[in-house]
Image (cartoon, rainbow, N blue to C red; front, side, top):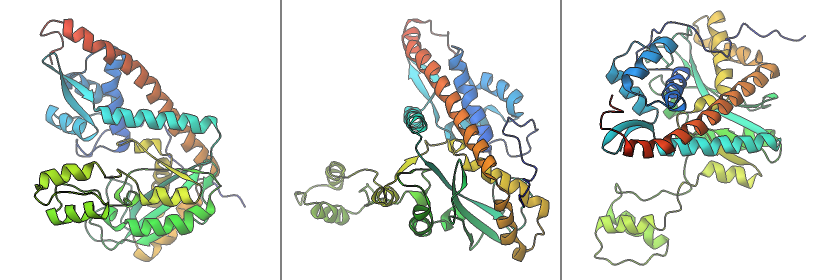
Length: 361
């Protein structure tokens, strides 16, 4: 008998008053903040903190102060740049570039009908009530859930649910050893050939093939690393010189997971920083967590069966909707990026020719 889907949150902008700490925004609100700032550029306006704050009051009922807003903007990749001696709030170029590369890659994958697999992990506590965005630090069993899905539904046999040792930081307990074992034994054998795997750059996903030298290394370690690379160096080099020499021979960010995927005939594409909303599995987690409080007994022994039950109620149709929603967000951002890029390119010229107070905050 076909199961009915539980009541689920709509994928549109929620209309609710805020209760969380003003700087502890959820992913939806962070995206609203980003699009609000870039929206000024899209309209050929210069954003200021006061203008942004007023718009956020309307969009997400933001009630924080200017300093809180400044902190949020820094945390999601904005900074002030000086142009002709004046400060202008801009998105960091590395964030823009990473997003652009990702969106271009996703457009290509969509056009080539590539099988795309979305990977992520989340948590649920036995005392979970659906209120708040972080696991409690007090008493209560906490489960970590790792899974993957495509537009056709969850990947078969890829479900992993295990007990966290404590509630302090579940991210640290979802380590690279656990993830790699799951990746090799449960994910890769169950996905279509030549798949593209989408994931974020969480530490458990990003163990490097080799350690990259840094200034925190001892001189002896730097010398050993260089010798293993077959690099000749003088014994009287200072530590700073050894670091500079090592940088020339470092292979960069090559990850174990990427290599494992490549050897199995797949490839990994990572989400741009601060853009986890591009991963449709985030919406699937939201639906799972929407279901759990309705039947939660707050009993440790009932938690895992309840999580499995919640996962079983997620249908292929739910996945199709989630993927379509994520693709819609990507299309919106891609269009906005083009408009912003055109204005920013002209802004540098205009600022150089403008009066001193034209763009003052």
